[in-house]
Image (cartoon, rainbow, N blue to C red; front, side, top):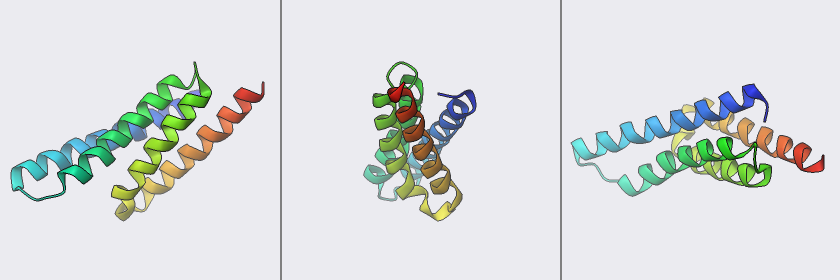
Length: 105
């Protein structure tokens, strides 16, 4: 994985985890519902993106799967931002292209 792609994946994954923690704290303080939606999609998706980014250099196929799964989970709760879903799609495409290039060689 290229260095800037690694930073891109780590940044987006960390952003999703931070947003998930902030949303969970907000839900617990206000008593609003939806904890079982926000926690798995944001924190789980962010954790999968981070794990996929970290694993990618040793196992491109597994890294691609984890990164893409995390991106799919993170897209739904961040749709309202318009920018984050686009960045997640870009990360998924980059991950697929780089994994294909690495597996070919």
